Length: 100
Image (cartoon, rainbow, N blue to C red; front, top):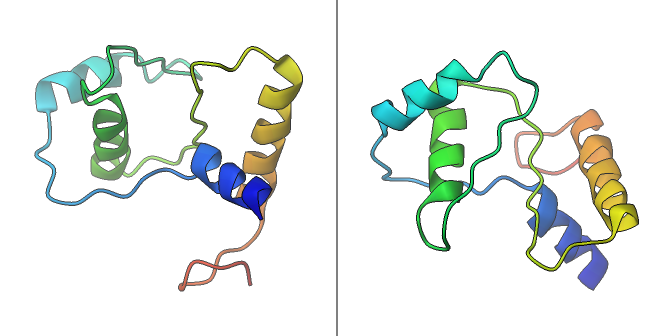
């Protein structure tokens, strides 16, 4: 059961509500839309996850979410979780949030 919980935590984009759009930062992110990957970095608690989640919602973007943890240094683990995220994305999702 722990493995499934870890998969969900690493590959599920958080849902937030009541967030004010940060248009200045959204414009900066818009500048990099031609790239296939966008990297957001900053100190803990600076709002990186909130910014990314809000930007994706506001712009109606399709994304693959993968949260990198500070202790991750094993390439095999990265590819394992990335594979899990891709598999989860390819399954149809019903309106109640479970695989059909």
